[in-house]
Length: 235
Image 1 (cartoon, helix red, strand yellow):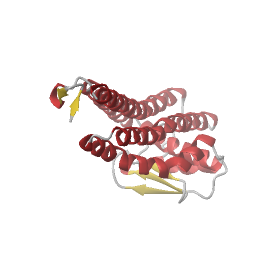
Image 2 (cartoon, one colour):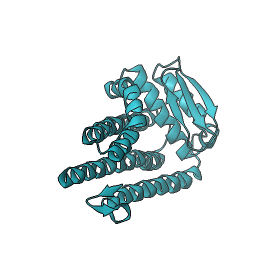
Image 3 (cartoon, one colour):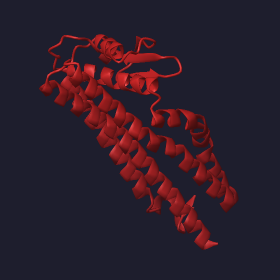
Image 4 (tube, helix red, strand yellow):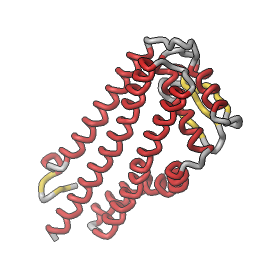
């Protein structure tokens, strides 16, 4: 593969890939260190992540969501189709500020689901199309470059843009879930102001990993567009 008439190893657009990779690594390191910091600080309430999650769900009138454990570290997630809130090994039985914050965040998604939060409904609707676009976009681009078919390359780029739209639309969903988590913890007096500050730090660090991932994908999209335009100019 060539870019702007130079061999791949001289393609300056790889700088965009490196920037994206650096952003992702920094965000990942930040969330890990922040979680570890607040995972060593126990909450004054003595609630475990599971207990906090059940309390938050009950106080928001949500009685059809099951809280259960899932293997792994920071693998916490909410599955709308099954009404299941999965808490990882590092969250479910821990009484730390970090654990309660993460559990509250996942409850935020359950609350969004119960309230039919529009961005969540939208991302759920477009998810199958975005997954399909993600699967075929890069192969289409590569095949188009091999056979020298610009329309196929452009179609692959469009498919890639559709795929990353899911990441972009996920951002407001994640930030809103964190907002709901903090609001619920505050309104129900489940944590002190100092503990809330810790929760905010953990959730902000986690949200920045989504921002970094989206930024990395956008930079990759920009690179693909630049390469495609470079090929067109050489024709």
